[in-house]
Image 1 (cartoon, one colour):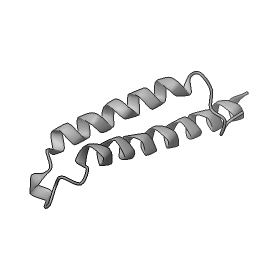
Image 2: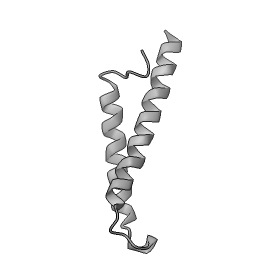
Image 3: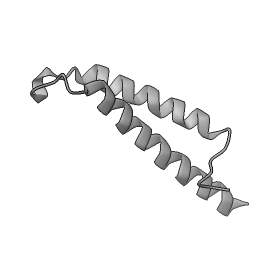
Image 4: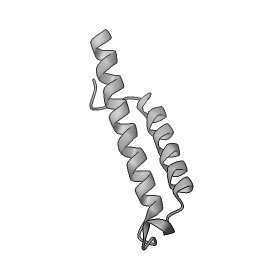
Length: 66
């Protein structure tokens, strides 16, 4: 049982981190010409929200960890 829990936690964390990166990247988009044009607080906020959503969705099941 402990092995399954560790496998699930690792898969959920990997999915949440990927979702964080995808959400932040989607917020940054193509409108920013230079790094100074990016609203980093908003991008990190969008990424954090994606992280939380992915973690909550992982509770319903992960195909990566059976």
